[in-house]
Every structure is written in structure tokens, then in C-alpha cells.
Image 1 (cartoon, rainbow, N blue to C red):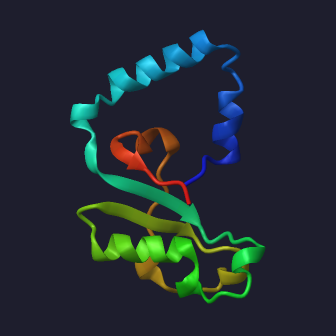
Image 2: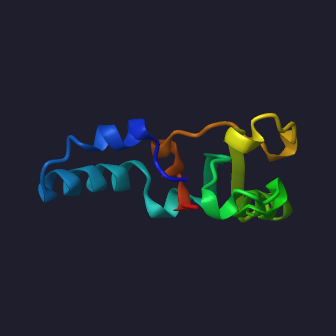
Length: 114
């Protein structure tokens, strides 16, 4: 998922390329490629825009991604951490998964942005 506002706010501390390079170096040291989980990860909520406004839950792209993760858990760890807006009263618990901090997502080989 897209980083939360808190994540973006924390990135304001990087004022130049050298600071970014140090950050990436630390991240690579903490999460070496060879030790990463061989899956893609996604967490997010049921936000939707005007394009998906009239679509049922099962037809929005995020739901379809979560369903692919349910079908192929060996490849994709995807789940909604919260149902909001149009879907806030939904009770489809099989689509729910615990929230994962953005830094912890770095343990995976791929982070999906949808």
C-alpha cells in the first residue's frame, strides 16, 4: 500500500541525496535481499475513488488483489487492515489481516502499491 501520512511525514527529514543514501544503506543492511521473504506484501483499507464508486466490493482492484492472495498465499500476503467509507459495515473477515508497519514490509521481496 501507499505509505500512511505518518510515514510520509517521517520522510521529511531527508534533505539531500546523501541522507537518502544513508537511509537506503541502513535498510539494505537490516533487510539483505537474500534474507527477504519471497512473497509480495500489501496492506491497506477499502478506500476508493470516483472510478470505483459504483462497483461492488468484489469488483474493486484491492479486493481482487486480496482474493489473489487468498488463492496464492505462497506468493502474495495481502489483506485489508480496515474497512472504511462505502464498505465500513462489511463483515467479510476472511479479507482482513493485521496492519503491518511500512518498515516491516521491507522484510518482503516486493511491496505492492494499489
